[in-house]
Image (cartoon, rainbow, N blue to C red; front, side, top):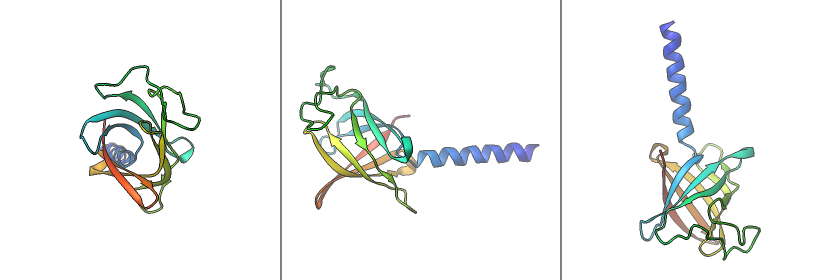
Length: 144
């Protein structure tokens, strides 16, 4: 009985550790230039592809009723709170990176190709946005 209990506890720990090495969860985005916390983003993986929405804006000057004025697609005029900013992205075979998705910067309305890589045991997420040959990386922190 003790061996069975130990096996269950170890299996649960392994599942928990695996779940942490994924972009799925709640993240605090940090501006890579200022270091200021910008927003909390909830990432899910419905249908096997990433989807992320702004759950809460953290900037001091944020207006609670702000909308995406700069967006040029179906998100134009939609509230920033609840705005879908991550679309697509699937786990690359044999790697801990999710590729092929897009990420929207609601401040300028631009959408970038993106990759998402859990680091530091899943406590942080490297979010890399690409525009042509250029890229920029932000490191987001998992919200406990």
